[in-house]
Amino acid sequence: MTKPNILVVEDEELMRSILRQLLTDAGYSVLTADSAETALDVFAQNEIAVTLTDIKMAGADGLHLLDQIKSFEAEAVVIVMTAYSSVDTAVAALRKGAYDYITKPFVNEDLLQTVKNAATQRQLFHENRLLRREINKQYNFAEIIGKSDAMQQVFALVNKVADTNVSVLIQGESGTGKELIARSLHFNSARSDGAFLAINCGALPESLLESELFGHTKGAFTGAVSDSKGLFRSASGGTLFLDEIGEMPQVLQVKLLRALQEHEVTPVGSSVSKPFDARVIAATNKDLETEVAEGRFREDLYYRLNVLQITVPPLRERREDIPLLVKHFAAKAVRDNIGGLSVSRSAMAAMAKYDWPGNVRELENAIERAAILCSDEITADDLPQKIVANAAGSFDIRDNEGFRPTLEEMERRYVLEILASVEEDKTKAAEILGIDLSTLYRKLKRYEEI
Image (cartoon, rainbow, N blue to C red; front, side, top):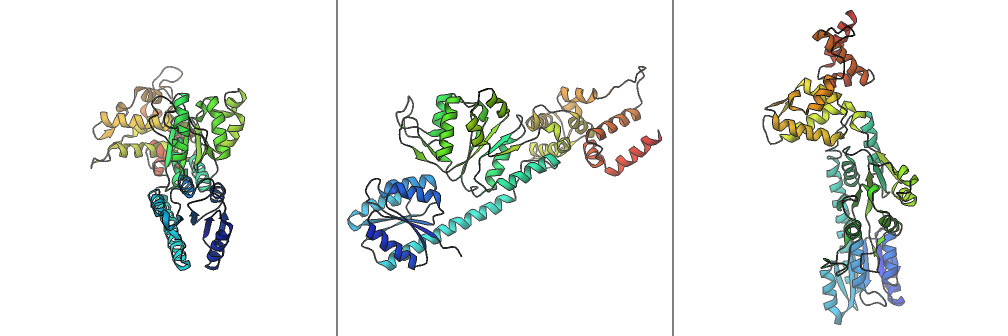
C-alpha cells in the first residue's frame, strides 16, 4: 500500500529534520520545504495527503501558504503549527480552512495522532470522490444521443482521455453539442467533484472577458467594488470550458497562452500572479488552422489548446441517430405528462430526410414547437414548413412524361432513396422509415417483382 505523502513546511532546519524523522519512523513518506514559496511548488508537483506547516516563517507565512494551497485544491488537508502564545492566529487558520492546529512545543504522540486523523480525512475525501465518479458513470452520456459509428468514435475518445489533464479542443458546427462533450469529459474524470465552469469567449467585450477569466482587484476599474477570483481560479480542482475560443481577441490570446504555460493568472489591477489548478477544454465552430494561417489566431496557443482534438459530426452525417434524438426530445418535451407523445411515420421520415443546418439544437427546437402544436401525436403538419417541403421535394412527383406516379411507386422511390442514403444498411433504413426490418425486406422483395 502506498505511503501517504506528508509535506512539512518549516524554515528552521533543526525542527524540519526532527519532524521528517518522526513522521518517517511512523511510516509516512515525507517531503520538506523551507519556505511557503517552495512548499507551493512541491504541493503542485506531488500528491500530498497532509501539509504540516509552521505559521511564523521568513517571507510568506503559513496563513498565506494555507490560502494558496486551498486556492489550488479546495479539499487539501492542512495542519498549522504555532507557538502557544499565538493560538489566536491558529484559530484564524481554522477559519480559513485548516484541518487542525498544533501548539509548540508539542508532544510527539499528539502530533502523530493529529497527522493520522488528517490522513484518514484525506482518504475519505478520496474515496468519496471515487464513489461520486462511479455514480456519475451511469450518466456517462445521458444527454448525448447517438448509436451511429461517428458518435461511437466520439464516445470512445471521450472515455480514453477523460481521466487525463491534457487540454482538449472540441470542433464542430454550431448546435452539434460541443458543450455536452466537454461536460462528459469533466464528469468522467478525477475532477468530477470539482466545478465545471463555462464561458462564451465571443459573447463579452475584451475588458470584461479578461476580468471574468483572470479576476480583478477591488478598484481595478469602475464597478470593481470587491476582489474577484475569476473563472480560472474558481475552477481550480475542476474544469474550465472556453466556448467559441476562435472569437477571443488576440490581446487576450497572449494572456491565455501565458496562463496555460505557467498555470497561474494575474488579476486585472494586480501585479501578483495567482496559481490555479483547472483543466482547460476549448471549443470552436471555426477552422482554427485556417484562422492561424490568416493571422487571426495565435499558432502557439492553437497547439497549446489542441493537445487532443475531438470533432463532433454534424447531424446530416449521422442520420441514423435522428429517430433516437426525436424520441428523446419528444419525451423531454412532455416528461410531466403521463400519456407521452408519439411521432407519426410521415413526420419521422420528413425529419430523417432534412439536412438540419442547425444540427441537434435545431432538431430540439423543432420538436419543442411541434409538441406545443400537436395533441398527442406529432405529424408532418406540426413541423416547420421547410422540413416538410424538403421531404416533398426530395424526389420527383411526376415522371419524365408528366404522369403522376401511383402511391405504391412513390413509396418505392422513397424507400430506395432512404436505403441509398444509408449505404444500403437495411437496419438503419428501417429505423428511419419507422417500419420493422421484416417489413422492409418484404417491400424490397415486392419491388423486385414490379
